[in-house]
Length: 278
Image 1: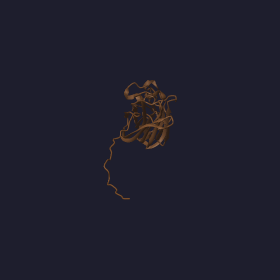
Image 2 (image 1 turned 90 degrees about the vertical axis):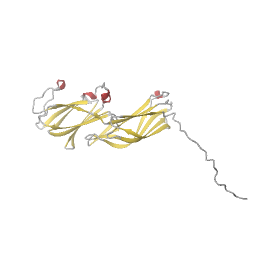
Image 3 (image 1 turned 180 degrees about the vertical axis):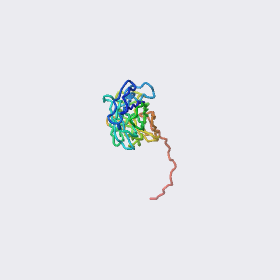
Image 4 (image 1 turned 45 degrees about the vertical axis):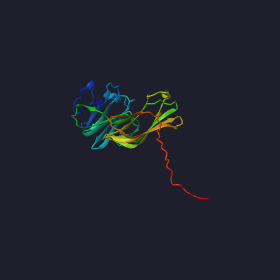
């Protein structure tokens, strides 16, 4: 997922850049206008490497100077010009951090994004010296910081199934925009409504949940099937599920036809007799 980073200097005449565009100069010798272009986040990608990079719904730019956040830009897919962000930056060293995501219910606080429902997410930071003479174009490649757990049910789906509930003991739903590290680690419960059209099918029911990830970690996961009255039909517990950034962890198996097998023995040795008289 690449982005063309283009800067225009206030000390020189505007020059055409890729695509024949011209960016106006800034009004002050101490301020530079910077435009970041992310064409791939709105186009349907055709290669496997960028397939999941398409259809992002939100794009953030965070501008840090000396470790302090000085400005934030946020775009949504419904905004005009989504995928091109322009900022006015003072001269000096800046760290520009970019986050593109499909997550929902996002809250931004002091350079940290927390999603109510995380989804596929990409991040990258670029540190550069912004000067009045800066006028070069650069490419910025965003990298996936999301992980995905995919559950596939291989046996026949009963007509009573209404929901699948996936509960993870440890799940990251936030991201530090400056470092790209995951935040907001908590237990997470995701409820997935199952359309009635899946009833009677075999090997077609699949559910996925996304989270944020940096270093590899493991978590316990429980998958529970509920009927329309939220009563448990079946469940399975998975221990030490490995999660990794930019990797899908897939689990599959029967859920409804699983039978508990008991091995039975009889303790047929009598204990010591109790002898009484009457």
